[in-house]
Length: 371
Picture 1 (cartoon, rainbow, N blue to C red):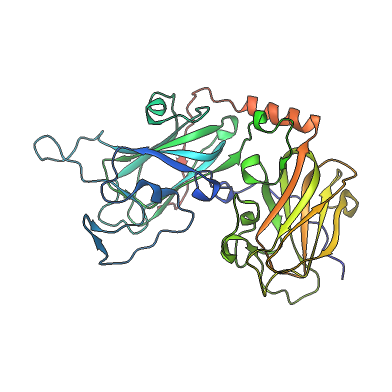
Picture 2 (picture 1 turned 30 degrees about the vertical axis):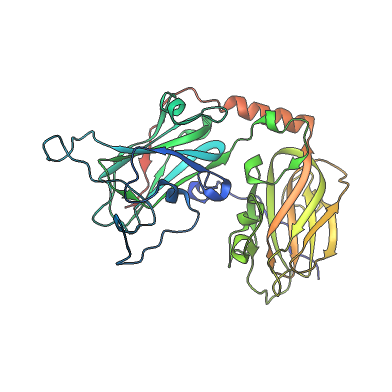
């Protein structure tokens, strides 16, 4: 059975569909917070949705799946000043351009902040809290009202010119936030890629999943996430196909490269792994044309619960690949090891230089209906 025809190019991405640069699954971390008396700051960047179990008490009160600070008080026991705030600093899993921020107060009903703001900075290396407090911060989201038990989405217009490594969420005057999402595009550091063979499709190296045929059980972006898939839900799994054809995904690279090794890992998929897979590379020409997709790995049988590695010899450089699985099933990880071409490295260097932060502020507006 012939596979479905190659997909056409995607339209402009939805900012909220871009990778969450702050997520623990991309190896983001929480550097510091002004206070975390009731609930730990690390909860903010958990990849899964927040949960809540009523009447679950610890020694400090009801247990919340989020970050919650103590109640602020004025000097005489009155309400805090209008400028009183708490803050938390998050290191992004990879430096990138921020297009949208989500501040989710799920399950915080009588203890949510009145408002929030978000700033960002680029700090090279591995700075500590004191260094970051002295950094030059750019406002991405101005002070904006928050509601309880609601997901607040803020777009960051004009952000495409700047990359950042850290964000700072400030809440006014205090309270709890369940999750912080920082959606954007990874901008890889050319100094960490020059002269190396690396995973071209990996999120942290500027790769991403651009299109797929099915995402019923789990997100296709899982297949290019860091680390190993521990359970089936951490890979990409399609529904059972009942019509002719097969399932597929398209992954893009940061720039043009030569692929030398393909890994299709079915770890954790036992009765639901694909029977076979193939990989094709985009070698120029319009996406819609079949002839522009060059064979990289021919249709090859797969085993359940197995990492499969194949040496390949591409005929040309590419910046897109298409994985076809036959007829359907689950893939824990897709790795495409290779190196940038000289033109590809030059493109990555230009992107790094063009997105250098200069401290200019970007106005921000709340999405309609964000709560």
